[in-house]
Length: 121
Image 1 (cartoon, one colour):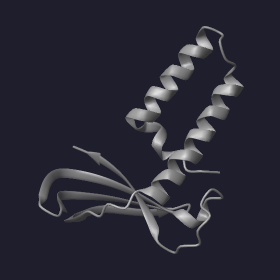
Image 2: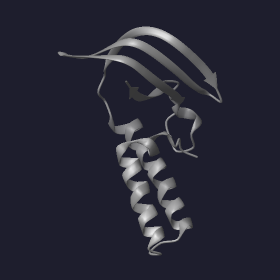
Image 3: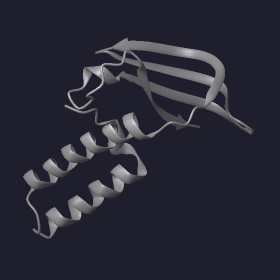
């Protein structure tokens, strides 16, 4: 099963709202909506694992960390993100890092943990 982290993104929320509206107007069944969400999870995880090649460096102060169910969660304070010439400063960042090889939908056998990054302020 693919990670469901991206359901809380703008794209994921928009999809869920659209599916809810279609369910309310009885144009689709809740089961079909669930299948669409599962396909979204699979597609977004695959696309980000295979297509995104941008690199960003960051540094900050580690506030808390946790490892549970093969998922790392880090909370950082006073974080600076650098990408070539751009610099962005953020007060607080939560990073959720999932092992990409543990999902059935990743065909590669990479040992790299692919971070799933959520910025909060």
